[in-house]
Image (cartoon, rainbow, N blue to C red; front, side):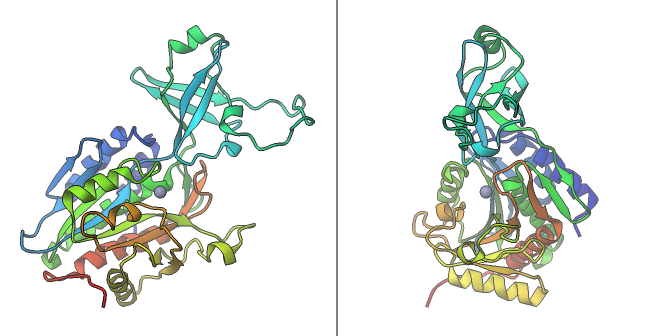
Length: 358
Ligand SMILES: [Zn+2]
């Protein structure tokens, strides 16, 4: 069971804006929280944060990794009459943007705005009407009437997010903006909490890493994996739950909300590490689902596994509906399974643990 105090932290973490490249606020509260369950915390030049539990210099170091950033938008252009055109930061979906509220951030604070939605009565239906809008077709109204007024509040390059709040649909299902992947940062912190509680059984060093800039190329994880070169890495991110109407499971795989975290097979996922995770899941009776990697995992796993001479890595994912939208939806049951599985996998490792193939 996820404790009430932990859920409160999850809500705080998700409610703290952390768009790609601007993760500092979220990282601050994550480090503060995880410092209770670690010996030491630190950050690198670009703001990736990590927490350590150290056993000794003679045992392997296992990394637990998630990404700290969320997708967002950026102020691209301001028109003479003060309307703002956005571009995307990461894979933000312009087709769902209209009629949403946004916050724009800069050193002066937070500016509220709305993405204009031309009234249904006034919409042009001919000449390209009904076409899906791109970001160039979207405009933000911040309540000003000129470029000069707008420039007193915002400038080109300011990051932007949708404002949708965290909410529990019932006692199991949560929804909100940026569950991808603030929930991963939460999961590795909670796994550290369990590991610290069972420290007497811990035989390896643990390094929990919350990386920046995943959504634009997995850059934070790449820097930190290169720097620290752990002996193995267990990565967590969200994956598509494909159990809602209109998704072809033959094409995208069958993943259901509430049936457990997924273990991925193939590509960057190291066969021996995946086998250890599956064995631990079976022993602890943690329900898991399976996913096949075609070419890339599409997560920080791709950035970590090939650093230097190779880092045996495995991805455990949290099923998520409506990814990259302000109503991302996940199950606390899956989240509990994910946290338990990461913690138990680390606690199952031996001081001479080596992952090899063949
Ligand atoms: Zn993600």
